[in-house]
Amino acid sequence: MEIFVDSANIDEIKTWIGYGVIDGVTTNPSILLKDGVFEMENGIRAIAECIGNRPLSVEVTTDELEEMHAQAVEFTSWAENIVVKIPVINQFGQPSLGVIHRLREEGVKVNVTGILSFNQLVLAAQAGGTYLSVFAGRVSDEGNDASTVIKRSVKFTERWNLGKVLVGSIRGTADIQSAIVAGAHIITIPPEFLLKMVDHKYTRETIREFIDNAKKAVLDMSEAPESIERIETGKEMAK
Ligand code: E4P
Image 1 (cartoon, rainbow, N blue to C red):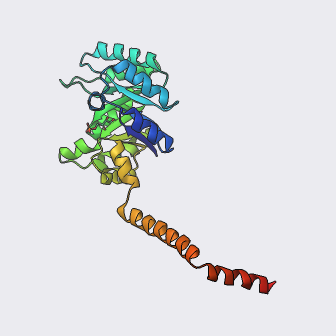
Image 2 (cartoon, rainbow, N blue to C red):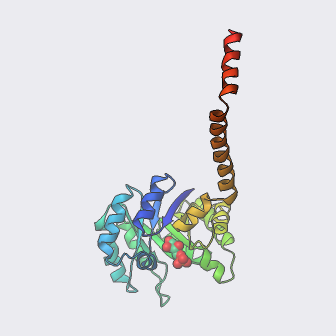
């Protein structure tokens, strides 16, 4: 399984890459806005540069199919590790499958985004998506079971050797655990949840106890020179 970070915050991305737990980065227009990346090309180039050869997903910002293709070609000229995010349908319900297929034929890696059902995933995979982004949180918003969609998707893609199932729209660490158990190939996680995964209040307490006791031991040693002397003398006598 791989972990991607769902962020455009360059400091957070660098931090988590530095921890050695991140295999790629995903963004979307809402994330770019939230993280203050208003000038897309320079912002994306900067992220792409600091993540080595890991993939960086960048989403098209249009409903027009021809324009989607043109943007995809432009994005991939910014850096070698760019993967283009194409929504499975546009906001009017028009399938983007032809654009995905065309890009695939041209050797461009596509992350098919906005997938909320197994039906959509099947067609996105058939069209040639390298990554198939299932939005777990939004599947749940609709009252459906994200784990079922993920499990079926993983089974299908592995059986027919199609794209990787990438789970996004994470709303909490329980979603991450469910996606892992369901067999997701990749989970893209916002930095705040990565931090929640590693933190634990009882671990903090435990470490505090160890540090306090280590300090006490040093203090005890300095306050009890006689006992150290006795130990030293004991060593001498044993010789
Ligand atoms: C995944 O690649 C998307 O960027 C993201 O996870 C979407 O999630 P949202 O439901 O928080 O918008």
